[in-house]
Length: 91
Ligand SMILES: [Zn+2]
Ligand SMILES: [Zn+2]
Image (cartoon, rainbow, N blue to C red; front, side, top):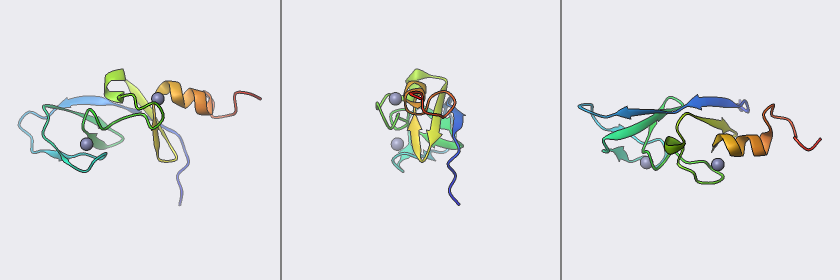
């Protein structure tokens, strides 16, 4: 079953103080940094959670990112590619 639905995910910066290192969903490595990102029910290095399109680091942009067809997109690229409704914005 393919999940083609768009989901908007909130990105949360978390402090790893005292907890065992989490595995990064982006590169698979352990996250030994002081801060990590929690998004889409996974943990990420702050530098690994990037927009698939413009490579912007989503942790720096802050609030939310979008996932569609396995891509992770910043808000700008999501709207540019799919429009705010998910329909073609040209017609
Ligand atoms: Zn990583
Ligand atoms: Zn982008």
